[in-house]
Image 1 (cartoon, rainbow, N blue to C red):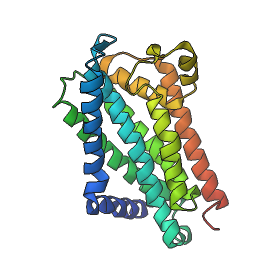
Image 2: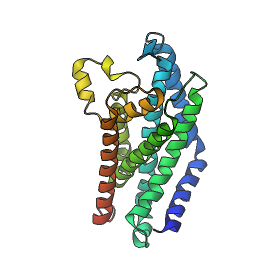
Image 3: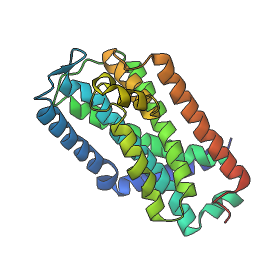
Image 4: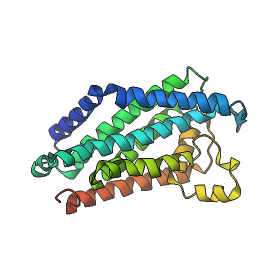
Length: 253
């Protein structure tokens, strides 16, 4: 394992974050606070509690996941796309660095950024509503796992994208609807029966469900399904990354 190469990529990506602090951290946090005010105050006035949990508190896990998933995909996709765009990706491919080391460097940096943003949002939420996290250790573990999983997805998107339009297509047209339809701001049982069935095919719903369980000991689906969905999703992403580097698809052309 070439730790020097991993550290170099990781430090370069993290330095880019602090050079663009407003776009990287401050902007998503402000957007999430506005979500919290609108959904917590406006909609919360009509919906007092869900599963005996105050609505303003109920949406906190969903808001964290909404921002973390979007930021994980964006950070990782832009992180690997620019070396492709500028041609510096060939420096990685010609160096004695494996696909695993390149992936750890880029995905690790993107996941770290998203994790920091998630923790800032969590700390900010205490200013609006009292929270009592039932399983704090699991909450941190699940947050980290989801950051890594969706950073891996963003890494794949960045490699496969041919231009900036494609780079933004998946987050805007796929990730955002999946998060909103995954129970970020409501319990699945509140939906009509047809949409409840449709939601069961949404992988993001399982991630949000188990993350909310870490907060309130309440989940929309059995925990084993959520853990399996997270594991399968992560394995699929790693397998695709391995195949891309093994074949050179979208890297050497």
